[in-house]
Image (cartoon, rainbow over all chains, first blue to last red; front, side, top):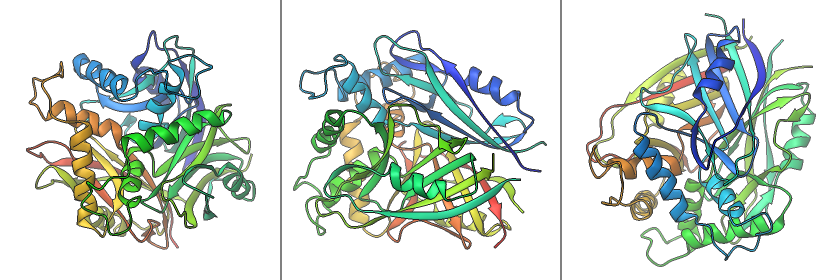
Length: 141
Length: 141
Length: 141
């Protein structure tokens, strides 16, 4: 019997960059009576985004952060600058990554690969709390 | 009782750039007997894409448009050029943004953040009509 | 009556670049007793990704491959380099494209546009086998 559950988690990155959210998302998932289905995440912000990436090597995450800082740098060339120099690059970096992700769930676990983790990609220098909306549809095992 | 509905909306941007489609999508959503669930959008084209972005500041959207025009410019360096100089950059800008988006729906409303809007990112200079396929699954409130 | 099915396909690209996976995904889809619903794909790797792109012109795919090779080149400037010079650019190119895609299904067919195909975007020079997790929810026609 298929059922659905809607919820959210609140996360706050300590600083700009890739902040793991798998634990919070996994805790919400474990609390739902569904073992097989589909989990969808939506980042409810335009200056932070979602990314599934390498979960083992911190250096790989630092390289990713450096890459996006380089291709979408803080700059005085943006027209929209009234929310600070880190605001417009935040929108660009969000546009280049993901706002929503959908991940199949099997036997109570996300079907991520062994080296995949879910990250909030925080693009602001003074990170506020962020909300990730969650939708789960599926059935008990 | 979970149910699903499949449909589409046709939209046509007046020009290249970010064109809001929240009204058309919202109208379709309101017409379905579902208040809680998951809405998925698929842009059925490879020279236009989807983006959830800042809905308040037009300057932020102009900066985003300028950014993508700069990193994926019209150029004579593309091998595939028989559909015009704006065609290949359109494919690249689509690849860098999104073709499908999934958004939880709660109490009849998309769970977007306060500053988020849904945009068709039109990449061609002479925009044709575009179709966004829609899938909604969920239940009445 | 809504039902769901979870599975996966294994694909192996012959080389770096855009490798069509529509046939494998379509075969899995045809084997499920669902004609209308939603198919979600998740690439279970961080050095390969998914892309819906132009299915007709091979030159357009070559241009896309060249674009990503240019904006995320192999380089000695990455801190994370112990898995070879093609590893870190692979993570970057994955971050710039998609890890998950959701596609409505209608009358037994993906609702892709006429010129859209599904591609595994293989970013490693020596491609290993890759697994794409699949989730289908829907109902018989």
